[in-house]
Amino acid sequence: MKIVASSLCIMILCSVCLAQEADYYDWKGLKSYAAKNYTDSIVYFDRAIKQDPNYIDAWIHMGDAQRAVKDYNASLQSYYGALQIENNTKAAWFGMIAAYIALNSYSEAARAAAKVTEIEPNRKENWQKEGDLLQMQGDYEEAMAKYESALNLDPQYLDALYRKGLSLMALGNNKEALSLFDQVLAANPEHKLACNARGLILEADGKYESAREAYENASQLDPKWSLPKINNVHSLLAQGMTDEAMRIFVTL
Image (cartoon, rainbow, N blue to C red; front, side, top):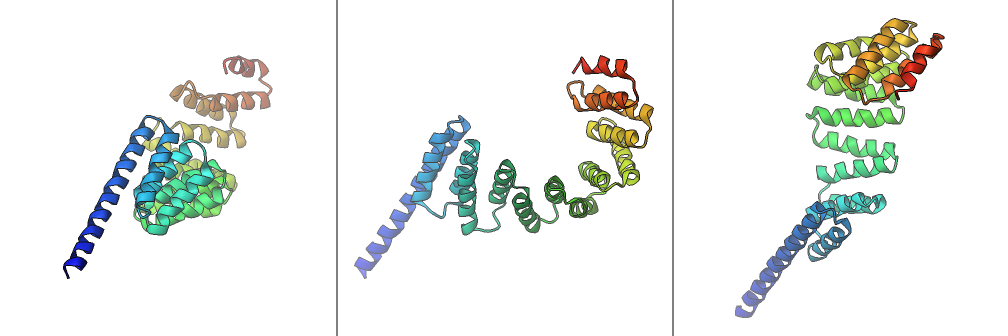
């Protein structure tokens, strides 16, 4: 019995020591990561995982470091390693979303975002993120459904209102889109994106003066933002107002 008890004590002590070493290597990795020594941090995180293959944080931290050096496929494998241990680990799913976006794989990113929404359905930002990724791949109807879910949680969620307006624009429903952009601007007159989008709709409807005013307002909100100025130039050229268009163009 004494021999068995001694063996158990040794096993427990060894486990504690391995866990402490894993913590140490993860800590060293985080210090290197903070110093932007990503290659060194990956080495430390890998050592932590070898000490304790079930160390979820080390898997996630290694994925983040691999993503920092643009080794996106390797980062996906690391995040997957964390998910193999605990499938509802939000940080790992968020890491996968970022890696898939970097690889321009928006459909996979959307699937990862859907998992985050499944884990945390009462968070409006999750619904919007899923909608944004669907919108980026041209699934405007599906994206709108996600934005509506976000708005069910918060009817005044301006980012979701704006994004829903973009989907409506893409589907040719300019009237309803304009109403949403007006709603956003009524709540936040400094929402430059809604201001610029409003100009695009007005221009498409042939309301050039109103469109120009919207573009100029957007430019005043952010003088360094070139998009509304470019849109204004295109609008003026379409009206044959070349001189005015060129005065703006040379400032870009």
